[in-house]
Image (cartoon, rainbow, N blue to C red; front, side, top):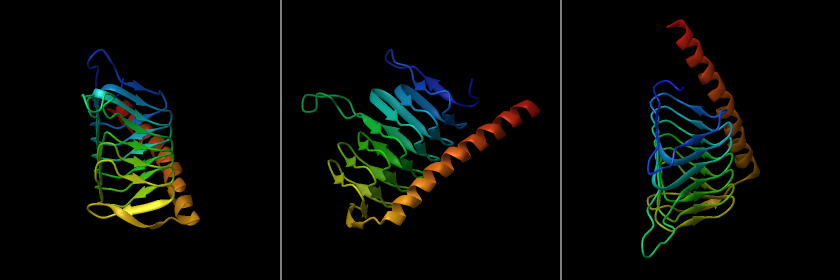
Length: 188
């Protein structure tokens, strides 16, 4: 049992969280949500899969205060807009992720908003503070920024390597936090 975490089945679907995933205290995870191996969801995040599904892939991290939601099917969009996050994705603090797809190794900077029907391709990056308006697509190795977001430049190999170092850091840091929480529970 995870301390201080709210996990709520909704509409007949319960969150599925891999045993190696780190879910920090204060998180709320509701409905049709799948969280993969070695993924991390940090303090005070909300992931709400009440009207469609949400997937967070292996080794991806969802940093503190982020909100992830999806959108319902309707007559114009019969599948609605699930939120699909691939493997090795970095999502910065206080991001708003809604009804979009972020492919493997995508990066979403802190305090960003990603709206319905957006796609961030593999190795694509949305800069801190940016707003990606509905239906926009960030291509592989592209950096977008601004409000609304627009293409800024292509990413270098060094920038991509730094992003992968960030993924490895968050996997290790999640294990350290899990251990600290376990140690604290034993002491109290």
